Image (cartoon, rainbow, N blue to C red; front, top):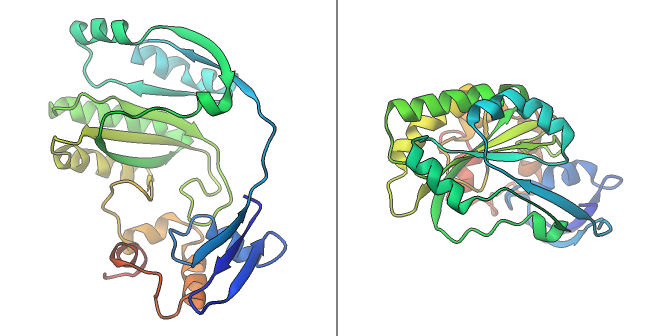
Length: 252
């Protein structure tokens, strides 16, 4: 994003980019609608490009051993860790997941069809703590023998400069926990979330988590700056719904 036009609570239109209203630009790209309405967005498009996607099955032992090497050999890398490793599941996976390698436009490679409904929790962990965090999650879920078939998603993400981005000024790994929508997710998420938070995890703003303003403040270096800017742009809290009040206002 190169810039945007922001409609504020008092009806003013602000042009925001790196040279004009720069602080609003840095804060507003991840603001959850709390600064105003983006009426125009300027994007810097890139030329179309192709990617080669490789898919294969391998043991978690191999992943933990080689992932640091693999992440430097590829533009993008992610894996799905299955909690249960019995031979029946391995045989089933080998039927549905075939080793493959093909080339296509990035617009076809990046999207992932999700045809099964689920509830999801996702946290972003400092890149150097990601594998340790995942290992503890797997150990805990196996210890409690949780009824969970969905694999755990693990992917690397580059840092950015957006104030409330969970990737602000740090490279991270995203760890996602899923549960089928007809099954109760609370038992699993209640076990996993404290582990994610133990490893300095920051929640995905659009997915399930239990954090509030009090616990979130210490995770974001620009938190107080964002809140001061938000108060300046919306002193009467016109843009805050009940959920945003829980996230942004202590004691709500």
